[in-house]
Image 1 (cartoon, helix red, strand yellow):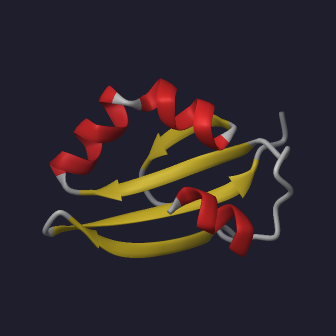
Image 2 (tube, rainbow, N blue to C red; image 1 turned 90 degrees about the horizontal axis):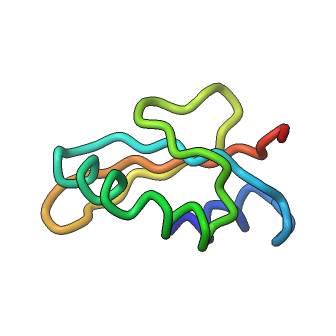
Length: 77
């Protein structure tokens, strides 16, 4: 889903990003436990729990019975 958001945002494959997420406790646990893997696979400089800033590309989806909102923005670093 994050890679799809990168594409929707018009980002290049080499662009570094910041990923924002919010949702259930399960979503928080997954991002916490797999932060390194998510960052590595998506070229994310950071994973931020909470709502995205204005201008972010985002989507809300049902995952394993709960909702999660994901958003990406290009990182300035």
